[in-house]
Amino acid sequence: MTTEAAPPPGSAGTPTAAPTAADYASVQQSAEFAELRGSYRSFAFPLTVAFIAWYLLYVLLSNYAGGFMGTKLFGNINVALVFGLAQFATTFLIAWLYARHAAAKLDPKAEAIKARMEAAE
Image (cartoon, rainbow, N blue to C red):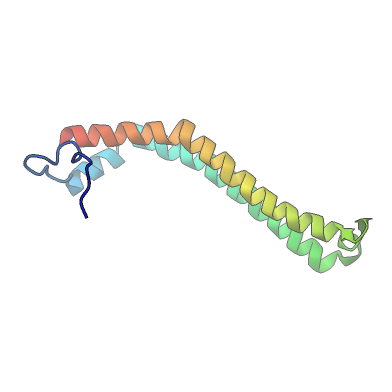
């Protein structure tokens, strides 16, 4: 099986040296990396806490507020079913929000760090 694609840049000649542990340590100590880490944490940590609180509320209400969770909203649809389905909707919403946040804020910063490391090779 052969491919018609050209080799990636930098692979046609002599192999380039891989970054060393010191290179990674210097990037980890840089302000640019700290900004990237801060952007990630400022998004991920609050949403993680909010989702866990929302999930625990659902579990606690299911265990201790059976009358409320059993309240019929319409037909055979009760509060517990709506909250349970909302858990799925919340999960997909958070995944979508994270993908947007990563594309807008995290990926450009990570790409800049990667380009700087590859240029130093």
